[in-house]
Image (cartoon, rainbow over all chains, first blue to last red; front, top):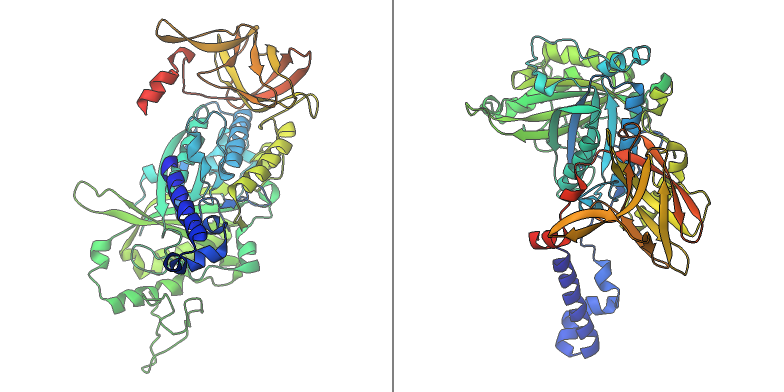
Length: 405
Length: 173
């Protein structure tokens, strides 16, 4: 691979050099643009536009929450081994902190036998969280945030499977290059082996970076523009980051694995599919008019005095009633192997970040569970919650706010 | 928060952070007794072990204009410490004490890594667990010493004598 890249570079250098020296009318004419740019022209054309991008690891908050969503994100849950206490957890965090610092900077972690795989950070972020049961298991019971608990059962919609639910520790590993994600996952789970075993891995994806302009709202596998109403600016910061105790600067993640019943979804017409959501399929704009980022006019009525956005529409139920219900959503598609009976297994890894699950997430989730017609085609099969650790400064290890509390 | 930057610049910045970090966290790369001794160590780590023996690895860089030899290493984590090399004997890679120590050429680096030269820790009095820090003291032939904190990592390379030989890894490609 190195030889190929080097060869390409050499050939181009040769071509440009020849053009500059020869000055022949035809050749020079064809290459005017390049020749005019001078001998630095070959370096000016980026061959890997995103591979070298680095997202800062250290800071007030962990990266991977309000940083731009990358093309790939894997969620890895682990369960602590019996007997791993606060000091064991501290040693794990010591190893992970060093690994993550190196990986996100494009450098190989200590003892990495595949060090070349670390050379392309591609905006790698690794975000570490702890689940509700971790606190009791490590003697930190008194430090569990009050609203950090597995969600109550939503019997009308939930078809939860243990293999996609729960977990003591979370690694959220995202990058624009899935090879980078795979390698980081390998390094971090290997270094966790003495302390924890992997409970589940959920692999999510969006559009490849460069396929659509950066910042384009994602489209889920039902074809819907998904995430248009996310809070921005100060509202987002307020919604996401906790100010409570050791969690200050951290957040809470609700991760729901939602399988899509695409066979039945595809049976309804396009107009009905837009009514179910309350947004147009082509550009994600509200069916009441405007552009994608405009608010849906829930009070709009048609010529017969009927609500344009039906009571069962997803946007009507999902919209925050006030600022206290805002949440940041980062959804990723998944598409796994079909079941033996041929039922496909594709859907959404729904990730919501809130400062407080009880106050911000649960009221919306209850409304959706009770009234959202979209539930007919979307089945929650996994559910997990984690406290996302606060960010760290130089010389600090992840989780020190909790472990030293 | 995303910064487009040349990898080299990013690496330099992060490396500087890592260096600044390790003194207090014990998780990082280098701790030296003097800020700028003749030899510096980077990326030190030690293989975890329950009992018996294990090994420490790192990169040693000679910042001076003359050759220096690592002649001795010591640590409270082991009853006995030797400097080892891997060598081919009767068609098999085996490890053996390195005669005269581990040389570090002027202005160059020596890699202590699995399958190559390493610091052998024997008769360890207690298990070395993942994430712990092992303090090493290195002595060079110019009489200087260097203190190094090496973090313990689980390493699946297993028994040193099973490390692939250079000829094997070449043919494997």
